[in-house]
Image (tube, rainbow, N blue to C red):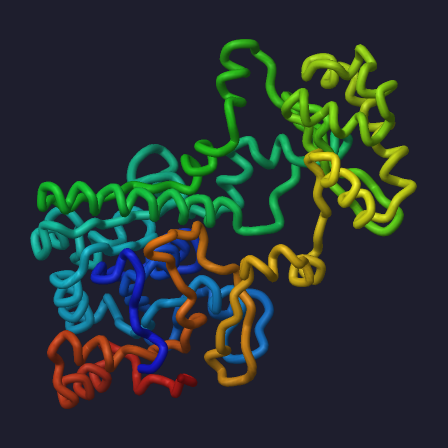
Amino acid sequence: MAGLAHEGPLTGIRVLDLATVFAGPSAARRLADFGADVIKIERPGVGDGARTLGESDGSDGFYWRLIGRNKRPMELDLKHPRGREVLLRLVRSADVLIENFRPGTLERLGLDPETVLLDENPGLVVLRVTGFGQDGPYSDRAGFGTIAEAMSTLAFTTGQPDGPPTLPPIALADEVTGALAAFSVLAALRHRDQTGEGQVIDATLLESMLDIVGPGTTITQRTGVSDQRIGSRLWFSAPRNVYPCKDGWICMSGSADSVARRILQVVGGDTLADDPRFLTGASRIKHVEALDQAITAWTSQREWRDAVGVMAAAGAAAGPVYDAALLLEDEHVQARGSIASVANPDGAGYLVQSAVTPRLSKTPGAVRHAGLRRGACTDEVLSELGYSSAEIAALAESGAIGGAPATVAS
């Protein structure tokens, strides 16, 4: 199939992606971006839930176009005996298997990682992604990123002081977990390459969020004080906020005294920069209301492009608050190629998505294609496993695999 050639530092690594929606598939997508051959296994006739999530201008949603990119979709019924046989044949040639079923589901399917999968392939790395882990009092609860974002303290500390706890408007916990899980897979593969031993990774949405929210638990344990909602400010740094301009918003950050002084110099000259209230981080935090009032008085008299330009020229840390349309127009984003253009698998025009990141100087990743239609690569993958055309047709007739794959634009 044209456009599916694998290239990158993970070329030669085969990943079986049995997971659905975001966290597990996000980990698999990151591996695929750097060249891994990711075979996306979906239930016949159903597919990944991301396919029908949110906006769409074709057969699949834009979320799927991103989360499914660079993967080869095939339809396989894991509850069907012959479907299970196909999976085990895939396992023998795989390096990684990713799943996010509720704990115990893989075992009930006769695919216990320790006694079946690692027996079939002792070098296999099995990534298990759940909300709360494979054990513990909450292990049997449905795991969703929203719950992890709330339990991790993120929601409690997000929002305006007089407002309610606020959840992020993106799948933050899933994407954070996906990134951390992809890292853990590479660490496990390193161990496998040194020893020949595969292993099972227990990744959770909750613990991934706990990893990034900062030292709030330490502060509470040592001082008895819990973080509260303070809008866009930070407890430990000032100035740090979003500030209104005539035609939009900008943000600023003065975590270092030298950078804060540059901001103050622009806003109020030596008078403000030498004000004893604003000379140190601790004093700026103590007088943050007055500090933000002074900055707002300056920004509100200017258009955002002018304000950012003046701050940048002074070496101050300031930037625009973009919506998606402004982001796409940004000259730096365009010059860097931070947004990739990719052919629409439905055949109509092209799509834009975030480009592969981080950038490797010798072996960069690439966006080879957006997420393909259900079953687009079923026959291809089975043929690679040694199944004949007649055997593939028999598998389809039995219901173990999906029907004939849909036509995909090359």
